[in-house]
Length: 472
Image 1 (spheres, rainbow, N blue to C red):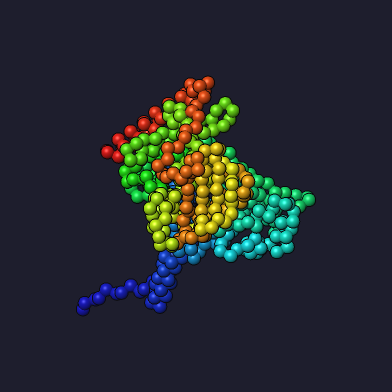
Image 2: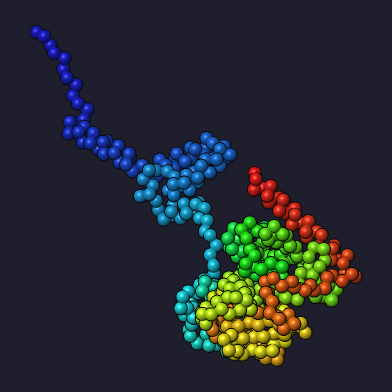
């Protein structure tokens, strides 16, 4: 008889073992999902015990960098869920403050003048009542300049915490700005004028079309172009003598504020080559303080008469003893020169003299006749009107505006009829040799040359440098 070994009875009932297995599984899952703070605290403590202070500092810095980079606290992947308010506060303290660009103070406001804007509309844009405008304009006689607004002009307002205007500032030009500042008695007006630095500048140009277009391409302003024409107006007829290929060099005063050109002064020296002939001019102020232009060797640029009474006009009819009159339709001597130009173009006196007539004269329409000494007389006809202050019996200076282009009298279109008489005889003003003015005084010649020669040498050097650069 075989005896089977007996089975050991179980230590625990089967139901208990099953229950224990289930509890263990639940505990394992809980530990995985929700690690206890005790475990985390133990890890931190262990780390502190094993690492040196220097190593711990490095680790703390790494943790801080991680916080900055991710904007999340270091630690558990679920830390965002578990973080307490204290943890969030500590993390915010660890993160550096973001860099913010400086802003204007809340009491500083700026507005740009737009189309249709008035001082009242601009005040309304910054929250100021209309009464503020009247208060400001009545505070100072010069305050009304703030009402003379230009499109694109900027106004800067400073307000106090109560929203009242304490300061108003505006830049009028590159050189001037105006302010109104509030005090106990009201507002005080102040004008600030920047003092520019004066330096000399050089330009060179070649005429390809018109003088004005070529000068603008070279960088010469319209006013300086007119000045250059005036300087050389005794020798060059800018209405008919200009040719393609003519050249000019100019050294002039330039006004600069903070490195920016804000204006120009007079021409210091110039050179103009017309139809192969070169003319020079140097500005010189004598010991009495009078300024004029002379040739490089000291002869006066100024003559008794300038060549043309109208700048850049077109000659529509020349001096002729056998011209057919365009209106009367018969042969009739044309004893002058006609300069066609737009209506209203200024007309200049070609020389100093006394006004014999400023009024109507038959087919000439509105006419001015000027007597120049005992020998010369000039006539200006078909004028639209006379310049202010020009009247019969008065005196005029060479280059002074005496009237404006029109079409009064027997005229087919806006133009100036200009006549020139010598001892009562009509001569061609384009061919008449003009008398010279006095040259540099002997006592000032050496002083003049000390200024003239360096200016002429600089023009030569600047032009040579520019031409060399253009060939590279």
